[in-house]
Length: 177
Image (cartoon, rainbow, N blue to C red; front, side, top):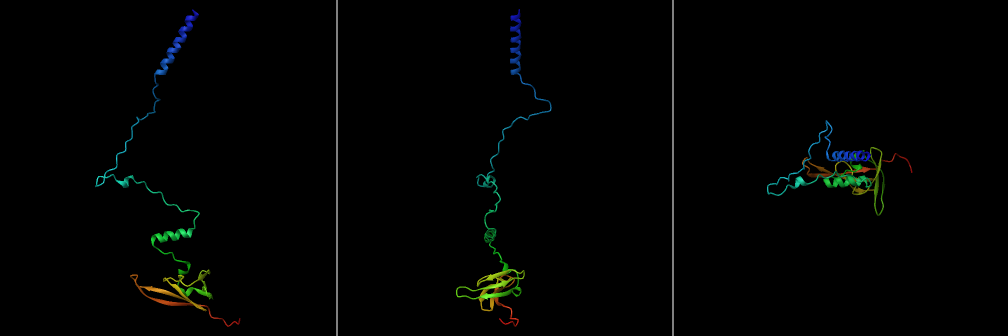
């Protein structure tokens, strides 16, 4: 009798195990899972000639980033050159009468002048350097002065003339050297 009882218990356990594996439990209350749908993207609309629209397929460009290891002023000058603008230098900030000529060095190879700006900075000036607010250019360096040629434009941007303005060393105050 004991053997039959063991056989009945094992067979009942096997039947329950098989029944539990085949049936699925219902989902918990409040949780609803939506049915999965296959996503289909429609083809791009054809343009007038029947070709796919290339603008719709183009990816947006990433913004250009500055190279942190390159020279900042070279980047600024390159950007200005792309736009067609010229970057003004520090000597193109003011009228010519506010600059002070401190010294002039004349040599066979090259001459240069030392100019003091209104903000107290000193700059070396060579023939051909830009100076002044009206597109002035240094055209001559003499022993006690430098000459700047400024161009005059009318209201339409047409060149009407030029004026040569000297910037001289200050007069001696009577001191003997």
